[in-house]
Amino acid sequence: MIIRPYRDSDSEGVKKVCRETTIKGYENKQTLITTLYVNYYIEKEPQHCFVLADDEDNVVGYILCAADYMKYREIWLKEYGPQIKKKYPIEVFSKKLELMFFKKVIKTCPAHLHIDIIEPYQKGGWGKKLINALLEKLKSEGVPGIFLATYYKNKNACGFYEHLGFKKMGTVFGLSIIYGLYF
Image (cartoon, rainbow, N blue to C red; front, side, top):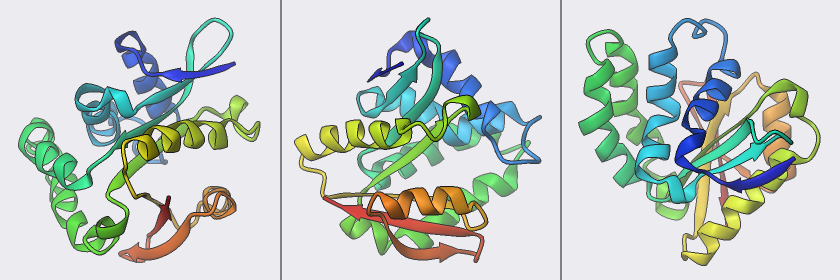
């Protein structure tokens, strides 16, 4: 197992991990899932993406990051939202609403992350190592903090982030918890 910077050749592997780890009800919405959680990061900020690869160099996990959430949001709404708006208008509308919930958070934690690891490789310390790889990169660039949102019923994820020092900063519709970490 190795953690390494993302390469263009990892694109399909990252998308596969995203689809395999998606929440129930979205399994058949592959274009939506990758447009919401993968495409911007690997296309616009691959320098802020790391993968967990197995011994055959297959992607089994990743951490993807937008170092500046406001820039991410602007580009996502202009370039990625229109790709799915006709078929998934509610999801695009939700993306527009995110700023209301994240506005306070991004003042101190401007970076935003997504992390996923497929089941057989979870609970082996790899999530912490992926986060540490990203944090080193962001610190070297002078980014002061990072945030994420996770489903409130995902107790494993909530415990994981809290164990790493992330602090609860708010909620979104009472369904997601926003966690932030200052460097």
